[in-house]
Image (cartoon, rainbow, N blue to C red; front, side, top):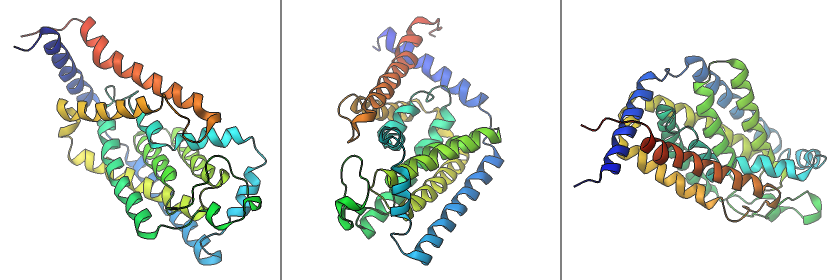
Length: 284
């Protein structure tokens, strides 16, 4: 026989998933157009850099420009592109916005295929493998392989892109896109990616966000399936736990990683365990 408290959790979560999915506003068509335009701009930048000056175009100039700013700024920004940080942040709205959460999950799956597939296909050398150590500014670990595309840029494109698709105000869309671009540029600033990698990453992330959100709208059932939802939440909880140890190679942003991990875990515990047990639920 199922314990009463487990039945109480199940009923509460099912009820809240159904309520919030039903009351969710549909995705903004204008947000989708913003994503496609953004992907087009990234593709244009990628093509211009590569065709005009080659794969390594623009790196030394951008890296030198970024060196004029505090290194910790770029550590904060590049940490936002860590997939564990991005998905831990998703726990903050997973139950409040289950359709948005489902869109993000589908977009992430598409992005993984894009990013991992191209990295394996090209296995391009990163700046530390090509340039002398005194020729550029390096912050953090000196990664040498699997340069194209930038995985952090893909993550930023997916996470902020899904939010752009849902945003109603152009001011919010502009801010979200700006943050994603800064996360991408941080990979040049820390010295581990070429600008072409960043443009390709942001483009792929934006397209994955567009396709993922469109697919979620056509296949909304899993957004309210408790087993699917809790499976995704469990995975994100594991990722959030991983943020409590280590610094990801960027010690200046270690506190931010830990804060995100703690907030995500507290949010998950509150929404999925504490609140369902203290609020009144009628068990039939």
